[in-house]
Image 1 (cartoon, rainbow, N blue to C red):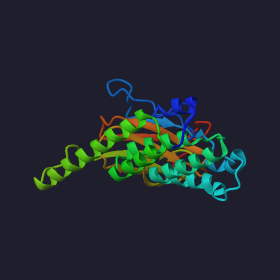
Image 2: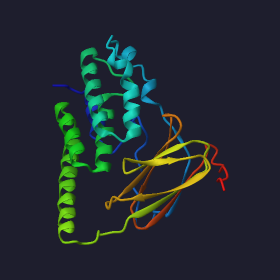
Image 3: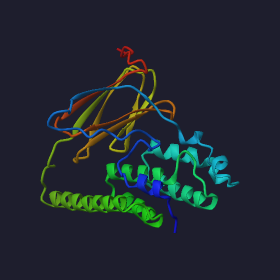
Length: 258
């Protein structure tokens, strides 16, 4: 059984993020009664791609799979794939156990990231897969409890949707729209609740539909490189239409194409 140090275990207890999370800072929880805005403005956040971490060197192991681990993690992040992230965490945990060392991106951080993404996407099979990996790695009890609650919620939502279809009922809420104005000079892939919705070209506008009926809505954008992300932005869904303005590093808008 993989044993974490006290500090590592304590870090893993915080499910929805901390300053140690490698991908990005924890999304701020919006107050639907006061802080929520219908028009949001962001600029890119510089992060360290997993591909830049020298896992093989840092762990001191001659394992060929460690050479590709970082690029596989980055690809899973872009694709919104929590199961691949969880398996990568398991692979990394094994290497850490063998070497007795950790790199700047450690398995508890990566596993917590996978759990957070699975929770946002709310797919029962994904939640169960991440839970299984968490149990195998003896992750923090708080993280396991949260995943179990999310699985129960996903099952309840599926049952409610089936009942609505049988009764020919209309959805409980209309789809919401996200208007994305890309004022930056980058091609940006847009994720809504962990799902890739499409790409917005520099100086252009795209409208995306949010099919998920649950809150919150979590928006995230990936730039031309894995080192640049936009968001995450957390919305509580009080409005039927939102506008997300994405700017350059200097926050100076690039005029939209006619």
